[in-house]
Amino acid sequence: MPKNFKQQTIAIDTPFGRKDPYGSISMPIYHTAAYEFETAADMTDAFTGRVLAPDYSRVMNPTVTYLEDKVKTLTEAKNVFAFNSGMSAISNVLLAVSSAGKNIVTSRHLFGNSFSLINKTLKRFGVEAHICDLTNLEAVEQAVDNNTCCIFLEIVTNPQMEVADLKALSAIAHRHHIPLIADTTMIPFTKFSAKELGMDVEVVSSTKYISGGATSLGGLVMDYGTFPEVNRVIRYEMLFNVGGYMTPHAAYMQSLGLETLDARYRVQSQNAYWLANKIESLGCINVNSLALDSHPFHEMAKTQFGDTYGAMFTIDLASEEACSDFINRLQLIRRATNLFDNKTLAIHPYSTIFGNFSPKEKAEMDVLPTTVRLSIGLEDVEDIFNDITQALDI
Ligand code: PLP
Image (cartoon, rainbow, N blue to C red):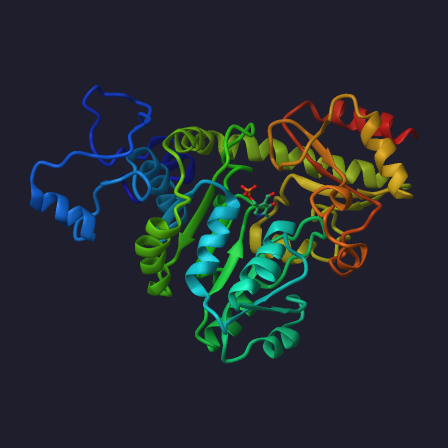
């Protein structure tokens, strides 16, 4: 594909690795577990990794490779791996870089399962969590030691909406010869250059913006080639020994989703921008949105990710009961988890996503009982606003 094609053309027109014998213009779904070889030598080459060719769909499949190739061209990553969920991508990457006795420098502001993966699951295998405030660079310097294997963060934390300085964190990580690993689920990877921001490895829950319409679960790992060991371990240990590679059907859905990502994101981020400002202007509801000029991380988000601010924000109501009443009164907006579906979704993170954390843990994570999270969809923005105001009963 010519180098100068723009992102939207790449998302639609990335050519297949091999010409389809029937001239299919959609990448077919290769629903097969195994592949036949012409010769014993070809088989050995594929199995030993001398030639990158599919041998078994636990580790490689043409439909999944097509999605990986598109993402590789879009992000300029050196290697892309597709997993069957965001959590699978995150756990495989963290398993690839850590080992007993090592520690991960991270924040308390993480998606609940990522927090639990690091603080419970990996802990059982001797990996420690060094928790600090990633917006405080001195605290980060102090948290990193000779056994730190990576700095891990989310580029926009949810539901707190915190944005750390990626270049500064990358500089700290690189001084200590460790990778900066960033979960970029909250802003599409087409909106910023991960490489320029200093990320070494990027992970994304492609269940969100990429799948579009909540069609399928998926996770992507973009490796920018700065720590070659990451590629080797994921490709030759994780995929083989742990499993978790994306299924061909999910990859098909997500390739289609990628084609419309830009069009959907333009509308969803604009809807979210308009709604956050409109609800704020009511004067009686506290809105936590990066789209607001007054937000403490507005400028940091703008500098790093451009002038769109994602399609998620939170509102704070008087009490936990007021949140339940608001959610129960919604008529259009769906009571559901997930982010960046085509449909607008509302959830009370305190009692659901973080429901199994203790009140003390939730307080430490700044997950409040008074917060409702809204993921804004593609509906007419005035209809969404009217549903919110009728549910607020104002
Ligand atoms: N990372 C973030 C920021 C998320 O919000 C989520 C899911 O909500 C995940 C990772 C996990 O992704 P998945 O649900 O695809 O496993």
